[in-house]
Length: 377
Image 1: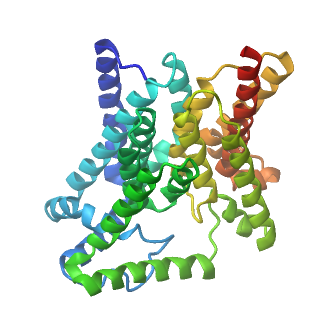
Image 2: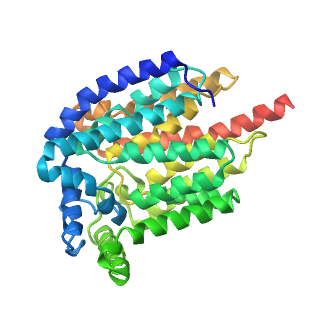
Image 3: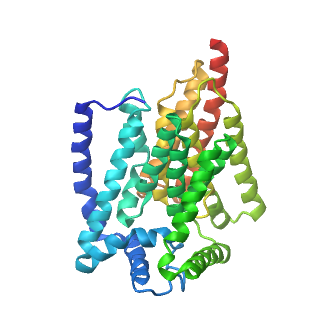
């Protein structure tokens, strides 16, 4: 992993400042998710039950976020606008750090720039709702960097923190177990569990466990009783009216593709590729994945764009065509009123289709790379 030059750091800083100047005002005027969760934090500060009912849309963020948002809730008492601006700024910082680290995985800036373009609308959506996806992105990138450096316990800690904040990054713990990185698995489980229960300790030991159980019960019941059309495979259940067995088969197919890709071990360790692949799978399998969840496809895009292309002309053309289509879909450009009415089944699951195409290229990439390595022996 190469370090950024001083000039590259200055350029990235300037771009980050300009980007912050655009998205922070957007977040200040909107920011519905953030405000909704701040109310939960206020309940925590006043000792009120945290999960008496479900939110207006979706499910509550996991318990640790209620404690983590305490500084922002205190600032919001004085000025909600300043609190929103601080949260948006934190998201910009995390995004910038993740981009800087991802640059070290590529041979130049072009793969990173194209990857950012491929998640442009999800990024914009994150700042409109003031969600926390760039924070999760930074944690996932940090975990990949630690694995590359051989520090699996630190990687497990970052994954555990991401799991406590959002839930579905827990699939990365299963990946660590598959790779027999047991110290990382143990650390990740310990961090996720300690943060989840520890955040609720203001209610006392018994109250902390009860609050976590209430969150799990409320979230599970909401997902079971009111299926939500979202940008993940389970969202197809409502959108396309598939029977549950079809959804399970689709999920098993994706899991099988990733498992086969992980089986095709290259001669050198490729933790970045594997973390990116599993993270994209986690988004697709998540019970609820909104458009901003596809910000987490950024490592997958950098990984696939920074790789060598197949030698045969037909394979290169197929790869380029698939990636172009996937990039158009995950960028969200077609969601800006460009879909014809007849393509509603693609429009309403736009990011899911894009994620599936990207996953297919990433999965096939390992098979090609293995064959290439064998030819070079």
